Amino acid sequence: MHYDIIVIGGGPGGYTAAIRASELGAKVALVEEKKLGGTCLNRGCIPTKVYAHASTVINDMQNAYKFGVLSQYQIDIERLRNQKINTVNTLVNGVGYLMKAHGIDVINKRARFIDDHTVEAGTTYTADKFIIATGSKTLIPKIQGMELEGVMTSDEALELKSIPESIIIIGSGVIGLEFAHIYNSFGSKVTIIEMMPDFLPMLDRDVDKVVLKDLKNKNINLFLNSKVEKIEKSDKGLKVLFSTADAKSEAECTNVLVAAGRTANVNGIENLDLSMNKKGICVDNRMKTNIEHIYAIGDVTGTIQLAHFASDQGIVAANNIMGNHMEQDSNTVPRMYLYKP
Image 1 (tube, rainbow, N blue to C red):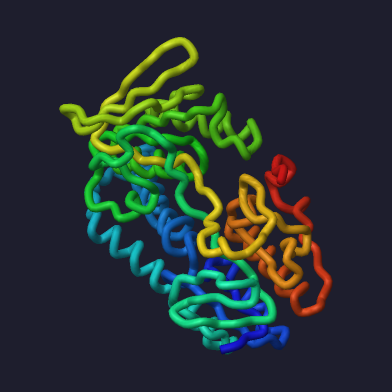
Image 2 (image 1 turned 30 degrees about the vertical axis):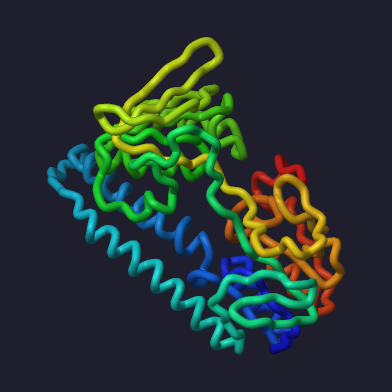
């Protein structure tokens, strides 16, 4: 089957681009190997915020005595997980409805380019133009012991079936710190190990001061300038061996969460002669790659990994494909001044 535009990837960037292209009159297909909504709806922002909301409720209850409200509570993990699942499914179904409403064909298969006008996704499809929106995947650092039971990524952490007695989080970016606060409020003893001299490296240093104060108030341990060398089994479950500039240390826990960041998902584009750098696919400010009829948006371009940023790129790409000149103004995006392609 032939389309005017095929969008590869059904995350916030991909489905937004598909909708805009359809509104402008294109015959559009969207290829997504998993669920619509991408990382944000299924394995990132939305499910994490459900747990974060529960964390906020717990913190409020813990401090309610200050206002004369005395309360007790217990955490029902199964019910919390079901709430997360229901929230995600509601939003994913909403995206599916939008696809139908705009006449966009959704192909639930993994896509692979055969050439620059043809993709294989269960069967072969051709298009005049393409938008690559394949997003990112969890970055797994090369650390001995990563395969051990009890070591998890943020994906597994979202399938919480029990509350760890203690957890060590590798990485102090947004993902790591968000889970640190969630697990802390649930009752876990939390330790964060960060290789860099600062945490939340893409945010203003003033933000660090506020977050650091909160970490101290919650007795969350933070080790900066510390490199994890190895993870091994121990009597408590797991032992993390790490080094700082002048010493070697170790800490024990029941679980390890790897939150070292995400990397561009470029699987399936091997047959294209795309210009790339170490972060992802190179694009101009119109989202066009070095191949005239192929555009790329979102995390796969190695830019800021945020849903609203990808969505904006999707609108820019769709407009340009349909002949409406539009450039992304990245100066309006907080933190963007730190980004260097």
